[in-house]
Length: 148
Image (spheres, rainbow, N blue to C red):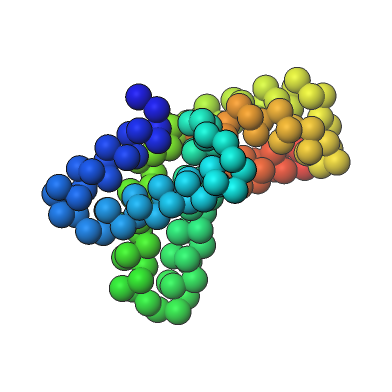
């Protein structure tokens, strides 16, 4: 079953169960998918849908940090609920050890020796780890490895 079909089925299930918060989040995701499909006149594959899910997750994380600074616990809770629903549509996340091993392998493969070579390493890792690791953390790990 494709990711899009799974999301659509989950929407129907949420409607039947009258889970309004979950339903709203799934509809938001489907709207983002449909918008991209209409804009680009294509049918999105699972990888492209995962990119949309990642983008929405990043937005939720940014919102949560902003709301925490503002002391809006009610909005933090709502965003965290949306975040939990969205994270269910990402592939299984890699462990910290797996990410470190991938970074070490990419550094060796690219022959990177300084921070100037970071782009080469990221270029190798992005397609391998997309959707399965937080690329911000991967970037920080690469930077630390190349600096030290």
